[in-house]
Length: 187
View (tube, rainbow, N blue to C red):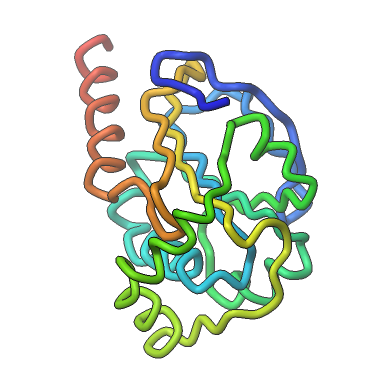
């Protein structure tokens, strides 16, 4: 079942790639993006991770980012781990977090990406060398992004329309700026 804005985000506690505990109930100074990806060798997922890395300086003071993959740690290290990721990465091969947040599968969304996003696929595979490999979990998993405020309220629940659809960076950055202004005004 999909989550909605202005609902309390489902809380969870898990271990990240570095062996540290991630607990959604831990107090934060910034809003949080929880980004659900497909499997670790997905070219479009790796392209989005690359985009987030490229914009790290722009985003780091505005929003905390956590990336979740349906692959085990070893596969994330093999594929996504080739990039120097400044964000926390959570392996979730059991897909319990996907179910908790209502992240969906869609064969239509899978097919749509191959027609609508074919240029992005070519950029991911040919230019950036994100070659497809093993598939862990559902190949037709559709990404989802959730922006959560400091009180664990969902500010934005973004369910992708296809396998490469994520919340635009400009919109993500705007949530961070909006909350920064609220802190300044109430301090």
